[in-house]
Length: 471
Image (tube, rainbow, N blue to C red; front, side, top):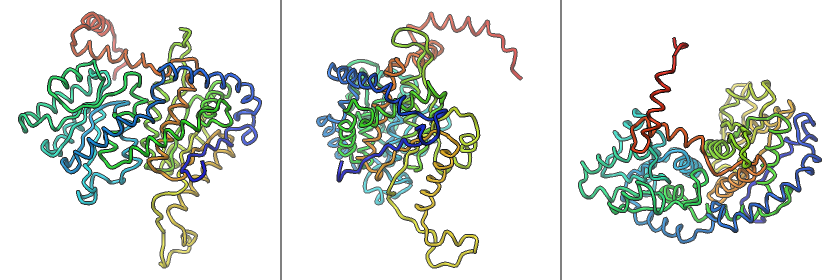
């Protein structure tokens, strides 16, 4: 790893040597689980060889990467706005990458300052006020819309699709097709059918990659490339982490060690809440993305053996230093039910001095000669130390610096860690039956063909429901 920007996993404050055996993990507990962990690594290798874990092959997709870059280059300077329309895994990865690697105020830079790259908006909810607000400010003739849904039938995405397409047609006539790019399944789904019929430019979501694992597919790569992100470096980082995590030794595989520590902390130490707290606004989107990845992958009613297990720990997103002034009180003195994972950046992109030769009040003199970088680091280290002294388990992923290369590493590390955790919990980390149940109900209530029986059942349930406790 010499000469490479890397990620370092510091889990000292998870261990019993540091915070005691009541809340910390002992080396003996790790030793006891090591043979099982090794077996799971080999199980995943076999599944990958059999084509079942396609998310692990994404770092090596040179052809599709070239296609995305070629498309993005051909569109550069043609549109003032890029609007991504998707939800869940079709949106959170886009937001995470854009937030991490673009200027923090990208959308209010001038066209010249953005160097020809468009403003980027992500419509990840169907809130009518928010939707209308964005449509009010983006002119159809200046805007490219990227509709993303793997199934091609996602109700939220397709509802917005119908509204936006009509608006484009009304304003642009037959030229509207050049303002749409779809990202969906290669063969099936309504959006694929419409794409074929209308001749929209399109990208394919690999059939074996679920939405929450799709950030390194065209789902996330197209909008990243359109905003100037080096997607080759992003995938190179993921490939680098793939190599790092090939060992079946928990002490040499950070994704495996993370899964083991979180699993033991939950099942042996009662820590059922997993807080991800980046000390970086740029990484706030990664924390949101991780919350879906962890919750949807591991929150399962049934085990792989079809036993009722109600598995999973609850992910929570916090931001340093903001949430030192909101959530930290609970983490410090509340229930011993949490593990805090910090994300830290060793070297920020900017150095901001606090004072430069100015007189200051005596009680602020200690800040003289420091920078916001120093303050940020002191706040992080102080919080980490305070939690550790209260025997609150915490660990840290430290990025040498935030770049496309290290972000690719981080995405891949957390995805693989989640896949390993699925093995420990003995659940399917790649389905989401609970989410599907809600979709079925929505389809039925909206009158979709084929869901008539469920609509009758829902009507009956609603008629029987007695709202006794409404004020």
